[in-house]
Length: 232
Length: 219
Image 1 (spheres, one colour):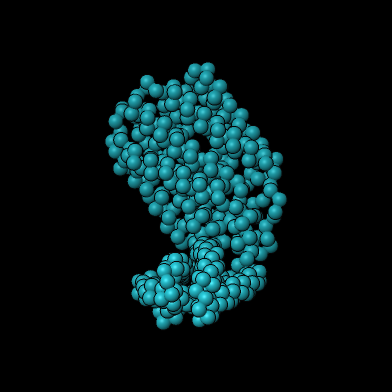
Image 2: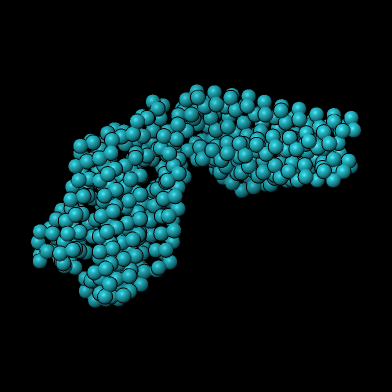
């Protein structure tokens, strides 16, 4: 792990902690349990990398942590769908079917997406991680699209998560694809580009986590439709 | 190797969602729901009915004055009033199109809608609109859910307004060709005027169905 990568990883840890602190300070940590858990896990994983790179800077740790992060991101999509559509019984059946389709597509991509071309854990990582990241992005986009289609109200922070995470996951997929295609020649540049994209997303989340709630409130007649209100 | 096409497609979809997100106002969404869930919706409907009635009265007065001017032999005056009537309809139709688009969005949230009665073809004097109404009746047979039927109903109404606008613009342009052309185009515009009224009534009826459907959903 070179000094630049270490510095970028340490910056990510600081921003993650700042975002979590902002959510706690604004009492918004319960807006999405999966999101909070995801940030806490990533902060822990990256902190291990920064503090003990000799122990954790390897493919097996990369595969393990990225798999855990992907699982938490999928849980985030499912939790968001459940919260947003909990009070819309007419939409729930469509949402359920669409998400099943999305998850089935992720599974299909993992199993049938083509052969693993490189041997070892690096080959597994470069073959499966892009599929998992892209599939997770598609699942999140399904939830996002259904929010627009049904014109349902969502919490500001749910949109913040979607606006940040979906573009980042797709850029991550592109970076891994380029790495698999061009080999280790571009590893450093792609690593920096990925880190820069991730830091941009985290900075956006940090700003939004600390932002006070906008004035305006919720009309009393609409309040019962907001499934997440009980968590605030 | 993972398909680049899938990645590029996902990126395009992401760009579209970001664009839609940038245009969405959460306060606007809350206001829309408040409109539907409270008596404000009923008041909005009554206000819309009054506004539609007043605008259509103005259109009618303008074209009746155009008829009177032509009867007096004042073709220039008739053409001037024709242009004025065309401008009124040009302003009116986009407003109705925006209202129909908003209804289409809101209808997706209403799962239990009373099925709209099909647009009666005989209610329309323009051949094109009667054709749209017949198409609507035909397509309704293939749709299962009331929500889908309702959205088709709104699409046909939108097409109807766009057709009326096109007919009025083209007829007003052709009316300048001479006295005989003026007479013929005035008749065509009269048919369009009558159809605007029919379309407006059907649109207000659709709004009423939307509110009633939502009230039934909430019970």
